[in-house]
Structure formats: C-alpha cells, structure tokens
Length: 176
Image 1 (cartoon, helix red, strand yellow):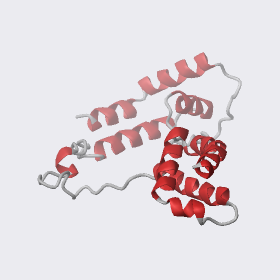
Image 2 (cartoon, helix red, strand yellow):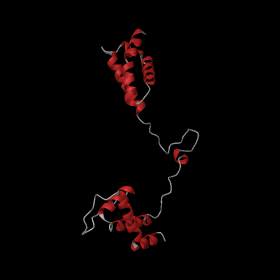
Image 3 (cartoon, helix red, strand yellow):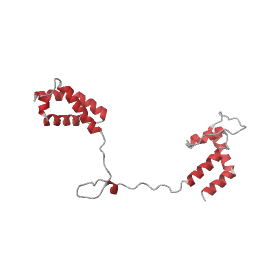
Image 4 (cartoon, one colour):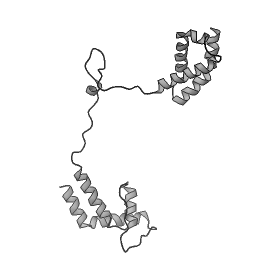
C-alpha cells in the first residue's frame, strides 16, 4: 500500500498539468488512475524499474480518453426497449428561402447603382453597411477625394441613390 500511495502522490502534479491542458478535473483523473491501479495491483508490483513513468503514460491515456468527444449515431435507438432515435427528437432544419433570385437581383441592382458613385462614397457605404462582397470601382474620368468627411460622403451618396431613377425602378421591379 505504501508503494501505491507514493506513486499516487508523485503523480498529482502531472494530473494537475494534464487537467489544465485538457480542460478536465484533476481529481477525476486521479480517481480514474487510482481505480486502474487498484484493478491491476500486479502491475505496481511487477512494474518496470520506474513505475512513475508507466503510470504517467496511463494518466495521459486517461486524460486523452476523457477529453475526446463521444461519437453518437443518429440512427441508433436511444434505449434498448424504445424505437425512437435522435433523428426523431432533433428539430428539423430551419426553412430556407426557396427563391434566392430575389435576393441576388436586389444585390445586383444595388451594386450597379453603387458603381455610379465616386470611389470614396462606394468605399464609405461598403464599410458602413458591411458590403464585404462588393469591390469598389473607380469612376472613369474622376479622381477620388480621400479627404472628404464621413458626413459629406454619407449625404452625397444617399442623395445620389435617392435621385437615381434606374435604381428606384429596378428596386420596385424586384420587390413587386
């Protein structure tokens, strides 16, 4: 029993380190190690020259097994006497829009209207409205003014979009 306690006490720092590394409880690891050691006492008596290194490996395997995810099948019955499975219990996937063409058409109309704006206004609207898929394009024949204030770019861009009759007509057509 003294050999058991000396090995057990010597492995506490290793259990703390493994518990921190694998996000587990050190006491649980030590309890599982103690069960392993009590179930197989002959290993402690017949162990190699350094039983600590052997049991450190055992402790590492215990930590790996506890931290690995448990695989669950959706088709296996939940209990032996029932026929219900996880497929029956889990909620169905949320309904997705059936027609993406409306969204795509609206996006294309918006992008074509944005391409008519000066480059700095395109960049401003892209950053404000998180239009990450839109790549601003410079308007031919106009040099960008990067020193404009945000208020100036905002009012100018929205004013131009409101006055754009093609943009208004296309949006009405998309949402009609």
